[in-house]
Image 1 (tube, rainbow, N blue to C red):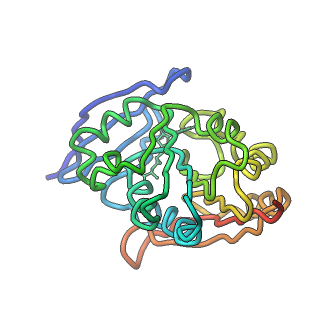
Image 2 (tube, rainbow, N blue to C red):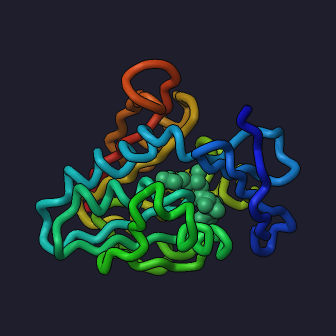
Length: 228
Ligand SMILES: C[S@@+](CC[C@H](N)C(=O)[O-])C[C@H]1O[C@@H](n2cnc3c(N)ncnc32)[C@H](O)[C@@H]1O
């Protein structure tokens, strides 16, 4: 019978919390220590994490020197999908808050996503994605956010700012003209769709299967910046 085997625990900087990596049969699972027992991520289901990159990156792949930002790394599936759908001259900046998560991806976990950290187009930043996007006005053709389980801070409370009107305005400033913001969520949220629209985006809420073509669906907002 399969059981959860704890492989490692790593601190979330400046937060007092920690993330735990488990082995579960052939798969790996990341959970928040002391959380509700729910999973932040597992290697068995990553259809919606793939789609989070596939949809926006397919739209911007033809742009010269396309540059995109992913927050955070997690298990590397969104990063792997971005690299798959972008051209050779693209750059994929990945902001990851937790250094231990990057180390996990450099170990056996990285096999599951095809080791996208080794791709020369990948630039990893051990930083809060909020800081990275605020530091680079008009820096990105697309921004893909999957740092919580929806538009509300979970990994750290400060993440809630990202989904606020101020955070969305900062995302818009970090995007190049017609840039795309994509946000992952476990469930739909009409209020967040409305906030995206009020923040200057043309937003669509898309439902994507978590795994294969049936069962659980997750939500991805695909929001195009309207003003230059
Ligand atoms: C659900 S996982 C991402 C899953 C990823 N899409 C994948 O394909 O595996 C969330 C990740 O975001 C990181 N994270 C949380 N808050 C962050 C922040 N403010 N800035 C950067 N990374 C953050 C977490 O440490 C975790 O690695």
